[in-house]
Image (cartoon, rainbow, N blue to C red):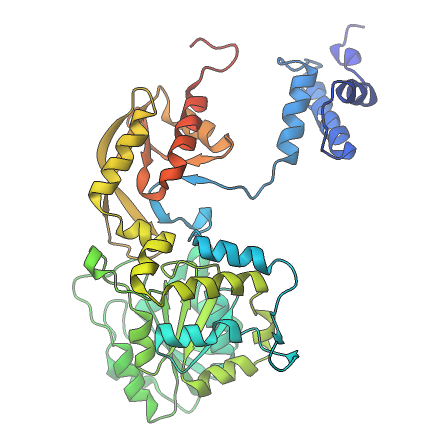
Length: 452
């Protein structure tokens, strides 16, 4: 019989040959054995055809792929500043140092003055109060948890009033009605998709009303024949009835970005000033780690902190270390704009972007610069178009080159144009330009067995 599969090497023989060649040094032997087994399974499925590159080369490639960390650093040339799939806000250098310092033993819940147990919330409480003007603050592991905790603590067993125009869906198909149901509160819809007046909320009040929820529509915009009730009017109307107002402002904007042409996102400070219980993300416009933050009146925040769910969604030491360091940068707004990557990228001027694009284009043969548009991303400023300068790299197949860039080390995430790959320098640091140019050169290089 001439079945080619009979001529395939045994696993132990292939592993022995690889070890003799020094392959797999630094990796567990089990990883080498599993890689050899996978390679042989693939060869049998192909009718016994050996790898075109040879057994050892193919085994080295498979082992490297197996040992490569799944969570990897990425060079973001997409121009989407808050790219949810890429981890949203990159941390400031000060936050990265703080995380490194907190990785060992830390004062997470230790009061050095008293020599006894302390609160993990103490590390950021005063900073949040200073940045937002609120009387009290609580940090949990993300904004969805913060909303769930607020509704559970304030409205479980009762009703929560929400405008129909604010029953939004956030990322990952999570919807406000679903969160309300999980909290144990009954949803009461008021108004219409495009118009909800204060009178709609007032008419919906009943003996079981426990809370009013107002949600900022951060990932889409409604225009035309529209009307909505401001959070200040809601707080004033509900305050005399003892009904709290929870305001989900979304992206956690602590600084006014109007001078840079960005408007439409609520400032956390403005919401907190109304007396609402204000909820927002830390890893979007705030520019910190993934976390959900609640600020507002002390009596309301205390009810959340006392709820058993608060422990289940509490943040860890790494989150708190990064958040504390980020919030410290906000003590000087000018420093925050320069040192917090998200704010710096959003406020970079056109001349700087043009110079950066030209520097990158000079490193890539055949590349040119062209005007383009960046995006804020993360569901923030959905109508905003940020003028930028793109680097256009001509290639026979943009999709093929984009795939090669994604598979490179480090991966580069770009976007496709007409017969070109487009690199947006807004989301690239100056120090990353050489890496991007080298990655493009590797992605454009002819593969073995193909014509240049």
